[in-house]
Image (cartoon, rainbow, N blue to C red; front, top):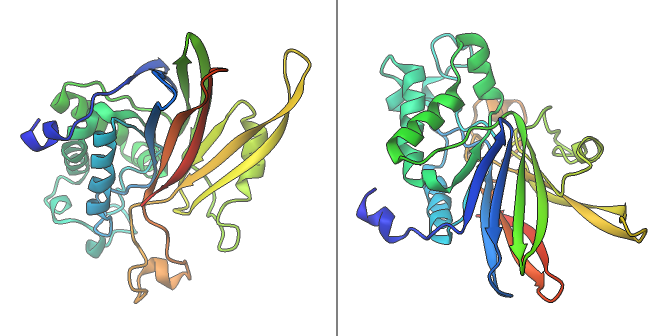
Length: 298
């Protein structure tokens, strides 16, 4: 690790354990009433695409490192659309390093080299439809290969996850444990010019009733939608809790100035760039209660 990275690195006050291939548990301890802990939620980095904003990626990765934050990425880390076999291939969308005759190898190498300095911060890297498409057609797993190379470079185990999976956050406060369940699912469908995919919250609220946070991507939209739910507690008390639905956005700017290209020609709108910050904090130290919120990372 170079000196600049070491200088801005903050000690991690959480650990991650792989329960199974698509469930990971993050454990942390709230030390006082002012305690807080951040996690970066991201999707659709499309790192190898020429239109991806690497500067914005680095800004958020460095912020995560400085905050001692975890990173949960829910798929399409790779774009992987510019191989010579792909009908969508477009040299204007392809970076020079992917034009050297080792296309799939270069996807893994370039992404792993870019993210390896932040390997310790990654909780899990999930798969998206761009990765599963490569696996289906070329029988190589981009996500697994990238995690393996990041681990080899950094000496820190980087966990891969599924197209969908779970992250369980267990926070200890005064010998009492709070749990927050995050369901991640890369996404499906086209989003829609009117609903921007928000209508999918109705389906996901039914499918994932145990989730406190549902994090998705895929459509390159960005929003936060809280949905309140009636809850019956073990004591018989009736109360309310909330599921927080989060759509993460992208780092790929396909719209640019709107001059042309596939994205513009099909009438698609500009998309918000960036990711989301998940923040845990103490809401009531006397009753050992932990709260959480999600805000945009710009």
